[in-house]
Length: 316
Image 1 (cartoon, helix red, strand yellow):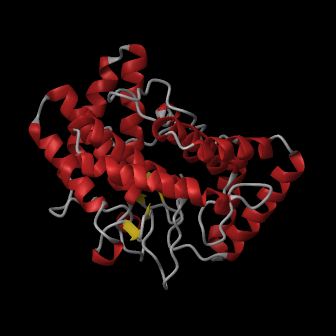
Image 2 (image 1 turned 30 degrees about the vertical axis):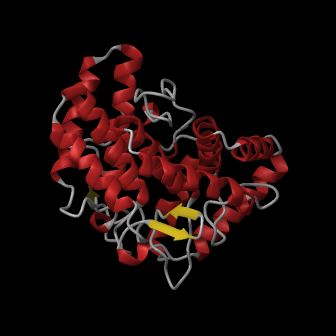
């Protein structure tokens, strides 16, 4: 890590640990989702919508890099949009609905012909910019925009997003299929290592579920079911014995991501009927009540942050 990044990173991590970072707000179980119809989002993103959120003159959320550069992350924009949609449902706030639809248009305009949304290159990432998380959340937005407007182009956009997401990684997509196992990748494999970031995988599954509910597409439902079963079978690999792992290549979850994993697993267990997800959600939650475990996790996470090279570094 470069010396000029150390102080900003320490400030950012202090905020994350204290729960005062806009990037690490509480994201619990969605407050108004339904199992059999598309309503609220499955993860509570309403805390992303605050006066502290950085917005440009057009009301578009943006992030700041350690260099001071202003960048537009489609994932940040998507989460803000989904938070606005839930606030519309919860409070009958039509101003929030209009913001949601405005951001849906923004995302629609930036979807590539292939159906992909560029998840990272705006932040100067050297990685391939495909991401199951961007695809899943983007599809969820397009489907809600379609339901509110009746505009077919939003439904077409969701189909393109899902089609790209279920394209195999070796063909540029985000899905890995081995026998009966299906996983989705937030980051493409590097040097043959498949990371299978848990939260990205979960957000992809939400997109698949929404698309099935909206269209009745049995092929997509089959992929959803297989992937949920795969996650339930492999979830023990995300348990280090005192905390949850962010991925399968040794990265421990931050406190915020640990809490997020618990919420995501609880919802996925509800949607899929996979009881092992619920079991591990409860197990991970028990770890948070042990101050020694939490201290061990924070220490390990801090060491990893200082010793692992990152190709992007967002300050806010």
